[in-house]
Image 1 (cartoon, rainbow, N blue to C red):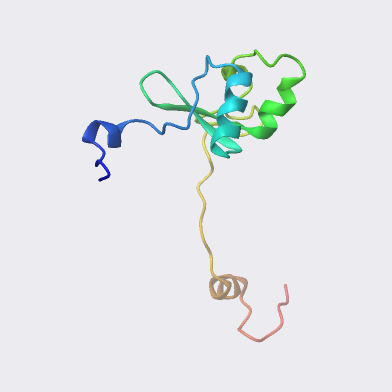
Image 2 (cartoon, one colour):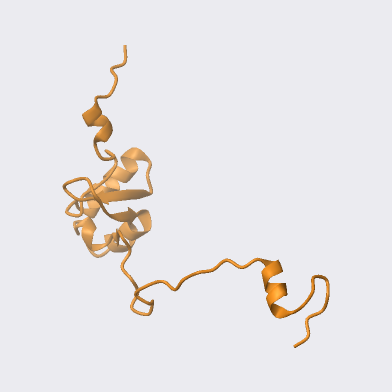
Length: 113
């Protein structure tokens, strides 16, 4: 007879995850054991702080397989790039019909300035 998981077990973080302080060597072992190419990186309270991909791991592996995961993971939320505006501009969806109407061109007709 299979035992049902408890509420605490259901609320527990994904068991297939690593901590920022875990080594790349350990993360590779976890990936291989569970057939994963991407691991969530959780803080001590189970909050998502980053993602570790197989590519991140292999790229840093040559330098030192004992590096902490936190030095090579992609942080969550992603860090803003310096060339991106601090706030995203407002986006507006415009249909083709609205574009034609605004241009003064009738549907099926040719546009002329």
